[in-house]
Image 1 (cartoon, helix red, strand yellow):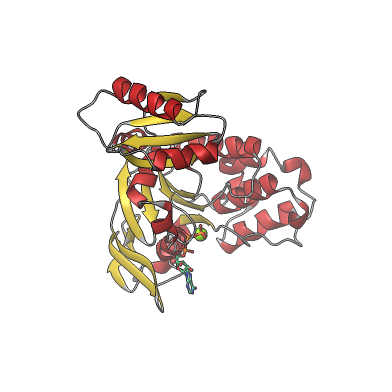
Image 2 (image 1 turned 90 degrees about the vertical axis):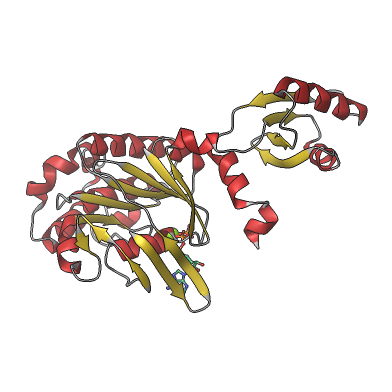
Length: 307
Ligand SMILES: Nc1ncnc2c1ncn2[C@@H]1O[C@H](COP(=O)(O)OP(=O)(O)OP(=O)(O)O)[C@@H](O)[C@H]1O
Ligand SMILES: [Mg+2]
């Protein structure tokens, strides 16, 4: 895609989005609510026209060649893709028939996923658990044997075990040569992609392999622990060398403005400062930045990101 743009009245949903997904690549779109992920999928799946720029899918133009594209891609929208009153099997047969094929013809490709829910094949789709619904939706997106897969937040609202199972399945599909573009708001899932695009408010902030995204973090980073986390963050904000301090799980991630001081030296000074402020139990450990740290740095402060 090249310079894709889309507005909804005053809202810029996509702003100059340009990147390519490579053959057999598992590519992740990572971004918070409203980043533009769904808008991008809808344009690539030919359900929405871009205002500007262009995109090709499997070498076909999203505006001129929409019917050819629709026949060859599998699209799993975030919500409402299944018919809740049809059974599991009826949903699959319906999606197969829309593409002029049958469940039997598509069975081999969906088997690794469908086998996990096949014993519920007579159950109404609306009565499935979140994880089973997503497996059925993925089966429905695959049953016509597409050459490319678009998955919009396939693991949102899904328990941790089903989340891992779904990602294992995506890994198998990718290994079979199927290119996949998948959106997720979960940073931990980014690590399972070959490359990711970090998106915020319609813009792509960075595109890289997951490990390389973390390495873009511009400053020394530390995990800081102390019993009173709220007082701790206030003490860090009062420290003259603080570049950023964010809650991260049950600790804080702190970055320091001093580039000319070794991380162990910074950790020692910060620990001494915190102890002088009454945090007798303060622990400061140099750490390697992950994707989430890089994303926070690219997005700016949380206040800016929310505004
Ligand atoms: N049909 C529409 N009419 C008006 N505004 C829209 C429409 N679709 C999307 N938007 C706006 O465009 C922006 C991008 O929305 P989009 O749904 O693409 O984001 P997203 O990354 O998929 O977010 P989410 O994580 O919430 O699914 C948002 O500000 C959204 O409110
Ligand atoms: Mg969305």
